[in-house]
Length: 274
Image (cartoon, rainbow, N blue to C red; front, side, top):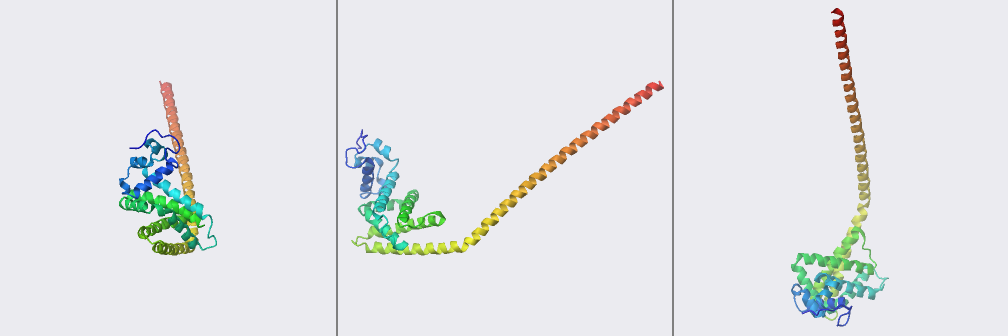
């Protein structure tokens, strides 16, 4: 059962409470199915109270996200602009190879996480979002643009490629990681070819997109002009209808006055005759 009453930053063990919780989750994931790990199990292993766990993380998934950010930081601190003169693919290859080195102590735990995500669509979606976020910084470390619509395609494609590489890595027990390195090179080459084709299409269709935007703006302006013209027509019709009503009312008033005058004249004639 989890220890209670720990409110200091580090608790009784070494490292911060957050670090201990992260390490406990990964340690437990290396031993059992990820879906079988309860929050109370993590708290007990980390020697923290459930209250302290809640203060630091809202869920088990949040702990996994913290682990991913921890690995991101290790890679970003270690890479620091090395291989800047290399081509983009080579730079990214070195960044991701460094990421694999950082993940090595957690290989069994990550395999458990991968198996969990393969059977749970919601878990897979959450894990994909976290991987995409990590890949954004891996691309930045390799000095590769990740912004805009094309950047989003790069990120999602790289996230998929990364999990394919991890699938090989889980079974690659060779010290030199020959199979894993070959898979990483293959996936990056494939992704590079896809991105180049997308960029070619983007360049070719750029004039058409510009024309489409111009046409759309023209159509929007025409619709706005028609809308204003319709408003003016409606205003004119309303004014015309109001003038017609006033004219009709004036005619009725005139006819009433004439009728009243005729009646008065007839009464005077009747009185004179009498």
